[in-house]
Image 1 (cartoon, rainbow, N blue to C red):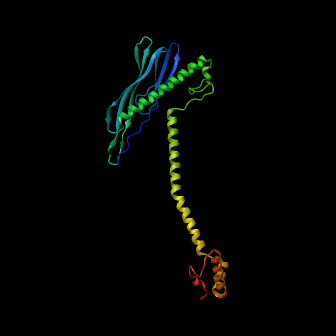
Image 2 (cartoon, helix red, strand yellow):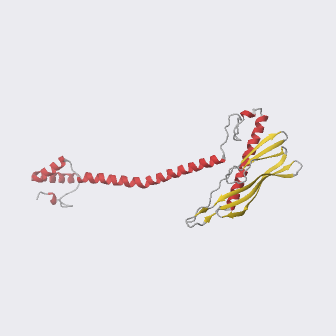
Image 3 (cartoon, rainbow, N blue to C red):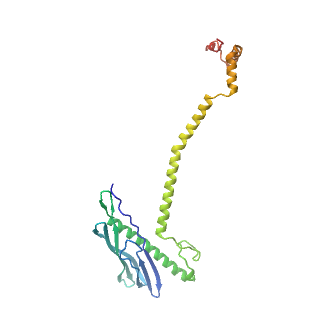
Length: 264
């Protein structure tokens, strides 16, 4: 059986702070796979027309036995008021992965395309959250809310002081995975009950009916024994049956023969 490819999660940190006429952008990959991990701060002009992330690399593979190395870089592209564009490198990532081996010793390395895609998605989301947090603080300061009591909040929240910090993407992923596993267990349990309970109910009902059909009370046994030993009782029963059929509009002497009910 072929081994599964290694899993990869990327949860970087980008924070933006105001400093006079400039902004300080703080970046940390926060990845245990990053052999070159280092927190870096870059200073950019507060007045800019456009800000974006530039991610490059992660397509050249360096394999050494069980180890695979993928290198890439992350930069901020800033276009100023004058239309001049400048790039500021945030990190030179060197991501190291260890291959999984199957029973025959064949190695399964992580897919470089998956790594590049995961890094780009996480960085884009991270920058979006950092800008959202920065502009909320700016709005709070203009509204006269002290910065020491300000907390990050949803864009739809009407009051600044009452909001609580938002959970990290990693915490949200872990919560989603936990919820999905709990729902899967619930579905498996309901499926098992749906298959198991009806047959058990049927078996229990059949066993009860069989027991009732095969067992008679002492009174029923005594009556049956008395009828078997008393021909008059049998005659009385035959007459009662005839009267019952006649009251129902039936003629025992025409449509059918109930002579079998007479005493022998």
